[in-house]
Length: 286
Image (tube, rainbow, N blue to C red; front, side, top):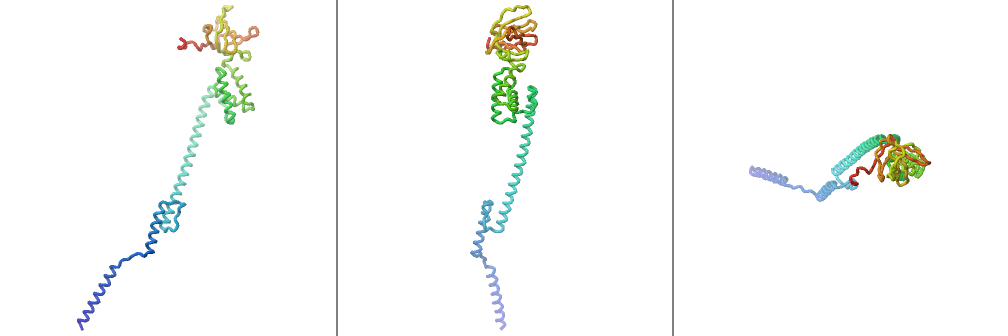
């Protein structure tokens, strides 16, 4: 009886050890549904990395959705930051450019006013249209080219703009400015237009056409100077101490006194007159 009891205990112990070993050897495997869902989740997470806002993947997991929302929020903050930085930078550049342009215009006006006092006032060309400004600049170029020793092209253009802003046409303004330039002190006047000039002192340029012996001891030279428009009698007084002129020589006379002789205009070289010879001293004529 005792043997049987012990044997029973041994059998029970062996049976318990076999059950525990079987429990430890159990392998857990995912069901088909779990494997399918895991594959879907992993593919959704990988797909989020390459998708934008318009490619929002549906059916993503909570982790994938949070990751996607965080990425989109960061993109939006970056866009707003770039817009703000660009706007501030552009505004700063506009202010700097406008300030620099204003300073350059001011320096130009100061330099121009030192040569032409008319530049001290507002420029009327700013009020002209593009077509009017083009016509004014074209006429200014013609006047500056046609009138020797005239004002600068910019000064003539500005005076034309003043005339146009007062209601005159470009043609009428051009005629007025041309006449004013021809009569302006220091401007070389064509000899054929000397009679229309009201100033007592004029400037001319031409070629010595003829010289003859003076009939008075106070006269150094007397002769005719001609240009493409006409010719005029010129008397050089000894007191002027003017340089000697030769026939055929080109001469420019500034500040000659205008007189009338036998109903015709004549000029006199006085002490206030300057005489220049543009062709003297040119090395290529030697």
